[in-house]
Length: 501
Image (cartoon, rainbow, N blue to C red; front, side, top):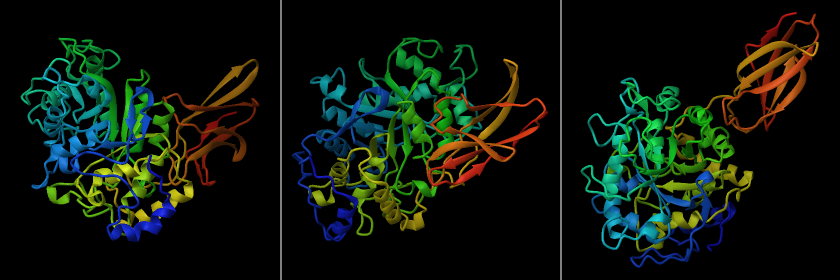
């Protein structure tokens, strides 16, 4: 096992990195595929039970915007050869799934072909995605597309993924082909959530529209409740969601999931996360409390921490081909993401593999990923945040919602009832959203006087927080509830609720 380098050790070696040092690593990145990481670290990916390597291979970078001098499938082959077990791609990543198809043939991972290595296939956890919100019908007001073109649905995307990676690329795929995790991609608005859930509780094959989730449940379970899986195929093992933009949207999706259909969440987390409406104190704790497997992405802000502008990548010129920079080594950024509580693996796109370990992004990132959850102290994390904030003045995460102040409790309401001869006021509210620090508790204010506290915990369903108080019949009261975070910052509900005499 490689030595874990602390943040302070990295500060001491950044100059050596700039000079081309291998940073003390004994790894190799040659064609032989040998490495000093004899067996990469694994973590359990939530309730999936999958043991995945702490570094996963992202499906973008050179797998999507391929430079002329890069043979993209070799990146995938290298990753699998080095023992990386989590592999990522999508129906909106251009040629990415096709490169997986080439690599899987070279690695004997295609069912039905001579030499198919079923044991190796079972050791890998392959994830793809659909941006489509519906499996039947559509809503023209909702964003969604597929690189397959035309009027495709989420089911079309699922079968397209299987065909590109295991079949003929023309819609056909072999018996025994499957995707481990199929994800509902890039959730951005509450309308996206509504659409995805449409028809789930009461699937009706005659319905004009059926949301993506109901159909994916059919293709996971081998059922045909939606009428969209007539062969009753089982093509996926697990269902996931992904989101770059809004932590509240991701929280809402998870809270509505009372049937535990969502097993994984792919979400942005990097050292500039707290400069925005952050994920580490909002959506990530909710997923962790539900035992949803959490996959980190945007560790380098889609390259904006280094050589590209803070915007979506568009061409091969945007692909980062270097390993870190003298000012900001890549290793502490990987460690920041993977030390965040709850993270199972981090997918990182690879622009460059190389025989020289100093220039091999894949191997440098694999080395950095040999770190356990919670290994960095809060001071270490803040030091890394300070370094990252110097790049583009900390404005690298254009894909996240802007930072907002600590939120007050949402949807505060009251009911009054007589119970055993007593007048009881019951207050309810939905979770507040955190900002710079995690929320610790809610303080109950009766006529501006503190009368109680309710400990905050990640809200995993839509069941509200609540507080009850016995009051006198003759009293007229005003109640407010204040959010209090770990630094003592408060946000008081406004408007208040009034209980008449």
